[in-house]
Every structure is written in C-alpha cells, then in structure tokens.
Length: 221
Image (cartoon, rainbow, N blue to C red; front, side, top):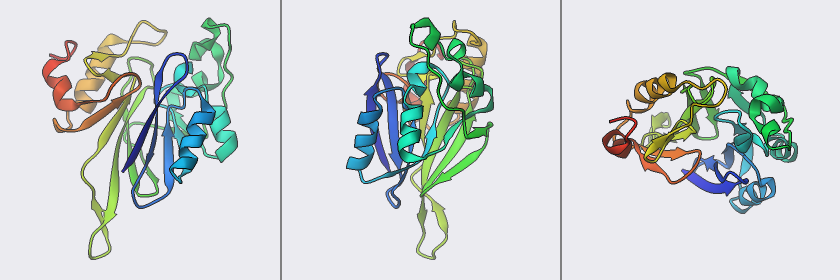
C-alpha cells in the first residue's frame, strides 16, 4: 500500500495520498491546503485521484477540495452530517479567520459502516463523532488476489482517524457540535476494537498505533 503524508495549510494538517500496490487509483484524505503540492505528489507517484475523502468539515481539512476536484474530476466524499460544513464558512470555521471558504458540495454522502472500493483498496467508514457531529475515521486495507484468482484479505487495515484520535491525545470538543462523551465513546467502540499493532494516521501530528494509545493515552486509560 502507498501512503504518502503531506503537512498542509497554516494549521499543519496531515493530508494523505493512499493507493493500493496493484492499482494507480488513489484517494486523497483531508486536502486541507497546498493543492499544488498535493497534485504534484500525485503526479510524482504516477497515481490517479479517484476520490477525495474528508474526515470532517473544518476548513483546515477541506481547503483544497475545490482545486483538487477541479484538476482531477474526483468526487468529494463526506459523512451526511458534515455536508453543510463543506460549503458554509460559518460552519467550517473559516469565517473566524477572515478568509471564508465556500467549498464544493459533497458528491457522495456516507454513513457508518459504508464500504468504498478504490482500485485495490477497501475503505470502511467508521462514524466517530465528537470533534464534529459527522466526523469519520477510515479503516483501509488492500485486497490482493489469491492464487485461485479470488479476493483475499491483505495484511489488515490501517486507520486514518482525522481529528478524533491523536498520538497521546484526542480531538478538541469545544467547537460547535462537539461532544467529549461522543468522542471518547466513538474511540472506544470503533477504534480500540482493532489489534494493538494497527497503525493510526491522525489529522495532525505523528502516527501511532492502537496499542500505544490503549496503553498510554491519558484520555483513554
């Protein structure tokens, strides 16, 4: 699996470019700025953007949606409850900065448990609200062909947690629509069920593992 990380925008959000090893089709997760850098990285890797997925609708995670979509034609995917945030500056918090962001609307709205297929990737949607009402995490793994020609599971999923779970911390819940109870419940019910060695790639900061957070995250122990 290809997993390229870019730190984008003034809030230094993590944007991920993910593709299976057997297909050029890729997803761009949380294009929060620096669209030219994102698109150049896609070209350098020889990939084609098949979908743009927003883990949530805050401006620092969606600022480059429009430019990446315009350049690639890829659909924007977000949870149903985040749809208004993509297009309304008062909801995506960009109005607070003085640079209102009117992004394109979502082309596909997803719910908890939905599964997307992009190339050889299997992308499972995990609704993990709390930072925002429609925040999602993504469990992504790769399908590989077995010798008989049928599908078989790859090495197991990796998690893209948006601003729900960080290395040693969790997402803020003091923004409109936030809920600390929902956030912690979502982490425990949707993320901590994965194996300890499952890698986690958050919306800001370094990667971690489920085991590390289960053992030492002060909000979870």
